Length: 232
Image (cartoon, rainbow, N blue to C red; front, side, top):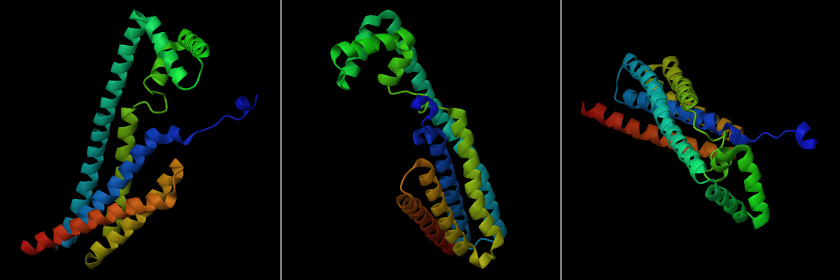
């Protein structure tokens, strides 16, 4: 009765959209901030910096959407192919598949009789679902969702990219490099904390991780921008 009145929710259920959201927002902040800092360090005008930033936002959002859709679609196609092969094997050799499932349960600690009884009952109810879950590790929680991943990544990339772009708009030209760098690191720290909180991870570790790589990316692009600006 308690299980029916007090259902549990698990953080892993968020993994599909959370991974895409964190990736998109992080990439949006880091890539756009690095682009703005690199162009500004090359002694470009404010208008050039803003054009570069807007172009980076639009191109990056589209690239993230396309990349996520293609990669997650590949995962979806692989899962679909595995399920179809498993469906054919269940139709052609059900006894072998039943024994295979029972062996999995025995490896997890059930005795032989109970393992075979469990395999019989699960296959009688949903044979393909039982094999997908226990043989191949597939589930509704972790299954590929290409459209969800593409949409989430595009939206969060654009939102993340808008933050350093806004900092560049509000600050005078002489302060663009410093202001965008500092603001972006703060945004990354906040993103790391939010992502860790949503995923139930340690906040401090996530914050350090995202800010370190963000700072590294901006430092390298600023150096390259300064070098090329001096040469040109």
